[in-house]
Image (cartoon, rainbow, N blue to C red):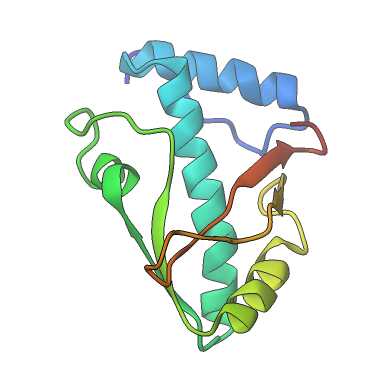
Length: 136
């Protein structure tokens, strides 16, 4: 990676994080937006992983474009959303999301909208907003 050196510690501000994202994007040839999307996905997955590690009955699987992008960097198409399969009753899922999002993950905090049914599929959709060090 052409001149990019990972930081020794977590950025203290959103502005510092933004500079690091820009440096990484320049060093790798990726767009800044694509790097931000990957970073957001990794923070979201990290927060969910905390619930899984607590041996929760709700399980999750990341799929779609972001899964391909994480598995095949530079080859997969860019995507703006994260598709996940979360198994378990909706009330348990919401409780687990609350637990996963209750404390920041590596400086990222999360809020989400209420789930919305997707037609007659039994699937739910919701938006998640990330903030870094209390700034969106």
